Length: 398
Ligand code: C5P
Image 1 (cartoon, helix red, strand yellow):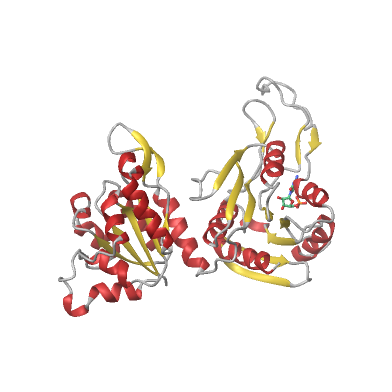
Image 2: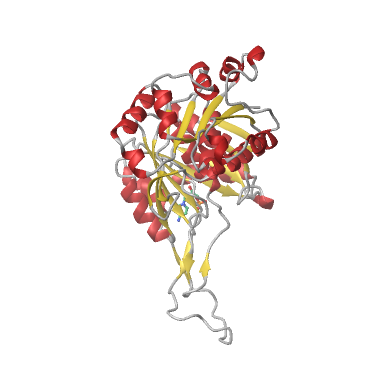
């Protein structure tokens, strides 16, 4: 079980840290909350201790015999401060140790994440920017604040990202465990499932949720890559620190992938791209009273096959495909996967057994990864982040 310390400083966004705490606990983390004195003006200590199941202190005197400021820092696998106010960033940048949280920040030797939240003027102030630069130069992962509604009627840069987005970064950082083998690499990932319109209200689609693509993006970003996701109909908030291009159809995905992959080192096609589309899109809603036509389908371009052809004899970008397979009388899932690997010409193929709701829309996944040397790696059923890291391990070896 990962031990996470959640530092909360005194901004109105402290209320969002309650949801972050909940999400981390539900994902199996053991969370200790260390609020600052000002954070308690927004959310009281009863809330933090009830949600975490632990006593909560803001100073170093409450548990002096247990030397909490050293113990908490040493025992943490990760410290995340959300929200991090301008004052907390300044104190951390200058190494002050005037409350429990700043002491913990000095005793922790694990990854430290900070999610600043404040009004735009405070965020943009040179003093804050200099403190952020200092913290980053020391290896602290400072997440850029979101742009949006702030405390009052105004909006701008300075909003705390949503708890789900922060939880994904925390979980990815923990799962990656210090692997920074994709620093300087440009990675393009397709995610979700394309929708091919039939008329103004109907489409031909599939059940891909985009969660595997999101896990690949979060893991690659945590390993240091520069990540772009081309997302088809993914109903999830953007992964933090990742460029996201939203598309709907296979044709749109094709254009976005070709543009985004021009300078890429790796392209991972995790999206379920519709193989067919309705030949023509009706301008008006097709009436129920109409005698239904048999579906008139046209073949969609195979984007991965195009990337293989376009690359020719070059070795970059490295191309990774996903194959959703079910076993049948002609062979097992792996037999079909091997045949597809040979036919597709990509460098790595991730073979997914999608029979019986095993992959689409689920939180877990299992797969077999086929690589160019002929090695077959089995990734047992587990969180989609684990499969994502197994894919990046194979990519990093290439
Ligand atoms: O041949 P099949 O559709 O099973 O291949 C799956 C792989 O090919 C996935 O990586 C998918 O993203 C990619 N694909 C594609 N364009 C299509 C269909 C699939 O790039 N039209």
